[in-house]
Image (cartoon, rainbow, N blue to C red; front, top):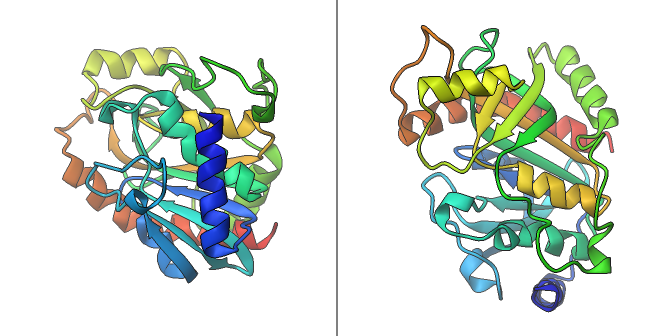
Length: 269
């Protein structure tokens, strides 16, 4: 796998001559941030050697290189999920490639279901911790280039970036919450009892992504910032039937506020 990572990074460097400072992963219905980019290059995933291909509606499947807030960025317009049939090494493959390209920060977004009764549909929640119910992406053969075999996870989401994001949100009068995100396999949404279980174990919201990328980035020494848009609720008395289309619709309505925070946060680096 390491040789494939190096091959892909070399291909991208040769094709673009671009060395990004920031990597961005955009979740379901949240690809609009690329409209803020001064795009220099873009490549469909299938045109990149060894790269997986996104199969989920709302994930366009493009790697985009450009400038955002005077910073060089590479953005994934669509990510990969365990439920698509990819193994964990494939899911985190782009993050390891990003590291070889030179990124110094990783920003992630997702759409998730709130289990904290204080959350409302359309809320923004900054991740300050997570609970991982997916297989660890660190299982398997280890290479020294990846970082420590047993990485500490006590400050997985950068406290410095979280503080800056809160200051930006306050200045822009954007309400934000902070909380714990739980990652599950999907693709089915949760039962009422599962929602209740996630709340009992300390979750504020639940989704099917983000955590694998964060773990790998943290192992490789890349500070991470992640934010969720609450697109549905798993709170007793507020549970309604969920569809993927509905999730995308809510996410797209709230993404402008998320985009503003991300853009200003990247500008502050």
